[in-house]
Image (cartoon, rainbow, N blue to C red; front, side, top):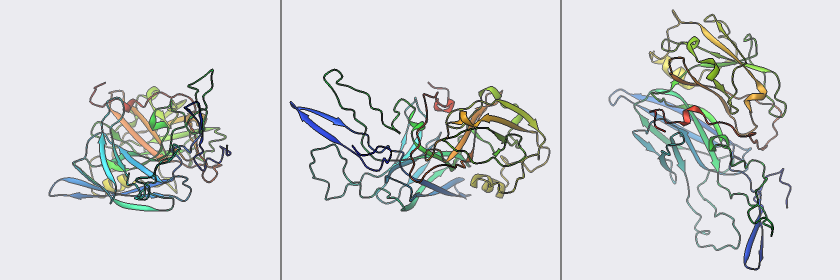
Length: 368
């Protein structure tokens, strides 16, 4: 078998003995892609709707082509448009967050009637190959811009383990294939501008070093040490000091705060190099009431976390999300770009251990 650390190709060994097929495989995980999703938004005064347009790129560090990508949305859009040879579906499962999925399954005509004697997959001719980009994805929604989480995956086979006379259903031990984790924990995810969920407030946050005075340093997933602080900015409609601190969670490891303090509005906010999200710039440009004018603002909140608790992984985590609720039960979400070090090109990350679900996996209307 090839070296699994390279994870650069699907490896199959098929042995037929006595009419029983035995397979031994550790294929490249679906997360071996390098997605970059950019969005733009315009407002139609006549219809009072927002038009969100997206371009997807599969970066040069990708191992697989991208066959799926989507957005975790709380509400179904009014309409969607797909790029040529792609299609969209709004998925509601009840036990998981609702999401808009774009996928492409066009098969190369040369592969359509091909019969193979192994478990390899047909070639999807329109999937997004490494280094390529595609635009033409659109959403129309009545909801103004906010933060949404995107995900992307490639198409590959599931792992198999070799069966024996004593164990005909052995478990696999393949890097990047921890199927016991929630699906959202096994995807490449990041943040992008999209229709805000009316039941979920998007808040502005900034990553800071432990004391809050400067920008946080890079995180090395192989050596996660030290502490990181998150500055949560209050606004005209959101008072950060009212956050239910013990139930706030940060990063894919759902880290809980180890320290907190209320800070004066304006302190720690303006640090050179900070970048605003597109949704922030858009709302400030139209003077939307969700963004305050800078006067009479309540104080901000600084939460501190252990970097080791974040469970940040190379490749998987393009953004770090902060989720939680206020003492009044108002749910919120914020994110900051992930700054990593020590990650090798095409390195595949893998989250550790079993983690609880995001609270917002539960349907926000209260249904189970």
